[in-house]
Amino acid sequence: MTTTTDVSFRYATRDDLPAIVGLLADDEKGKTREELSDPLPDAYTAAFDAMESQSTDALPNKYLLALQGTEIVGCLQLTLIAGLSRRGQLRAQIEGVRVASSARGQKIGEKLITQSVSISKSLGAALVQFTTDKTRKDAHRFYERLGFVASHEGMKMQIT
Amino acid sequence: MTTTTDVSFRYATRDDLPAIVGLLADDEKGKTREELSDPLPDAYTAAFDAMESQSTDALPNKYLLALQGTEIVGCLQLTLIAGLSRRGQLRAQIEGVRVASSARGQKIGEKLITQSVSISKSLGAALVQFTTDKTRKDAHRFYERLGFVASHEGMKMQIT
Image (cartoon, rainbow over all chains, first blue to last red; front, side, top):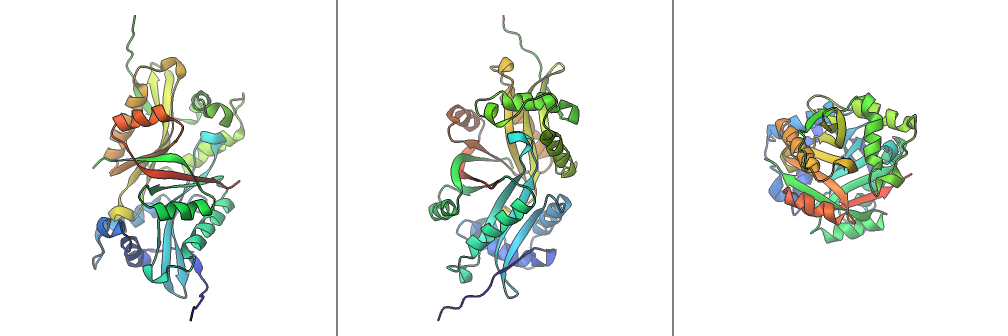
């Protein structure tokens, strides 16, 4: 039997950190990059507080959560970035998109992206952008189907 | 005769807006994207104020300027973005890199990037990232020479 459960959305609070880090680690690349200990490394709490410190209602830098009932089944980081280029276009940037492996196949990723685009529009953003590792071929097809174009190279340099 | 002039750096103020928009428009893609009128469209001033509103000393979202004497010869937008992924790594993001066409060939772009990496390190960032249009092949070689890796697809969607 296939059960379809409604998905709701809200921004994360500090109490959601273990669930978010659990999602970040529940991923081929994330499992080596994250540290899901109990208690969590202080670095996550500090990073959460830093996100809060640079968030305003108009220009959030927050994790958006997808929930089924009270269970957190997906997340992404949504950051609104003001800038001057393209006639001062406000940009929305997405990072850390994850859906719980137990909840895949229910279009939760698509609903999360759609919700973040809708929030971004309501805040006045003209562009939504993100980078995705070149090895994640399935993800590219998913995002292209949602209307994103791989028009840019995403360049990174680790400096520590 | 080749003259080598020292380059200095500072963050932009509102008074620098016409010079910055001039630089943004002094570019193959920028010339169609920007509007360099006098006075400038209000959108630029509003965007500058929005950048200021989300800047803190610890997590700036500011334009960094390169100067020769008092002349602004280059710019880039430097945004520090707190986030949870990769054990709460702080990221620095670069956007809108421009060198005045009259000042090219003096490694000003390289100095701007080096300066922004240095600022990012001092603020605790572990990663510097940006996206660059896939058609800017010369830019890719320039950034790769500076140590950046084109490891990601840069995906964008215009939503207005």
